[in-house]
Amino acid sequence: MYVQRAGQRYRGGDPAAGIETWHAFSFSGFYDPDNVRFGPLAACNEERLAPGAGFAEHPHRDVEIVTWVIEGELTHEDSTGHTAVVRAGDVQRLSAGSGVRHVERNAGAVPLRFVQMWVTPSEPGGSPAYEVVRNVADDAPYTLRRAEAVLHVRRPACGARLALPGAPWLYVHVVRGRLALGDEELGEGDAARILDAMDMGAEALEDAELLLWEMHAEPRYP
Image 1 (cartoon, rainbow, N blue to C red):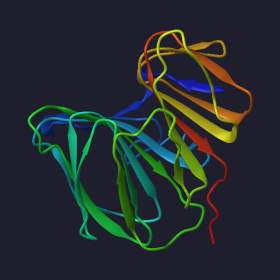
Image 2 (image 1 turned 90 degrees about the vertical axis):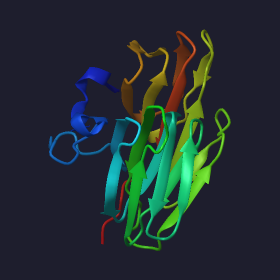
Image 3 (image 1 turned 120 degrees about the vertical axis):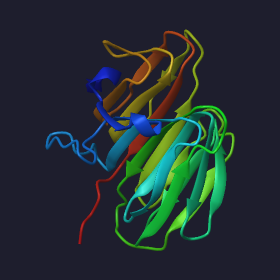
């Protein structure tokens, strides 16, 4: 198990434009050959957008982009005609497939905070697809069938113990609160990368919100 603390993330974004970003993996101008991905997970970015700030239209392909809104509202528009406002507790998925363009911005009056995760699909190509799941229930698994990966949202109360899913690659991201995991204590923004996770448990040291990626296959390239 490797623990990456919130303060170890790469600082990015454009603060002058109201965009603050913290990258868990190599991203854009931040490159570390030893930290490119974990299994199929290639990005886990914590983003903060000031009111009116956002990312101009830009392209993606061969990536599953999953977004979890923590506070505020995220406005999404893409080249396939989908538009949506994503709120706290919603999961958004954009399957880029063979190619798609999109815009993300904070069109609201309050700051926006979200976690965006990029998962590389098992096979490249395919048609772009989009989905928003509203008000995700505690531990309601969200399956990425193109990537053989499952996202679990957990919201344990202080003192609660929880079993973690077994998987070849397990990624645990603390959105809020504190968590005891093995001999480690994780706080807000911390993440653990666990190989060959089996029969692992954790305990919430205070009320918490967690994102868990259960991943079963690495990408297969032609």
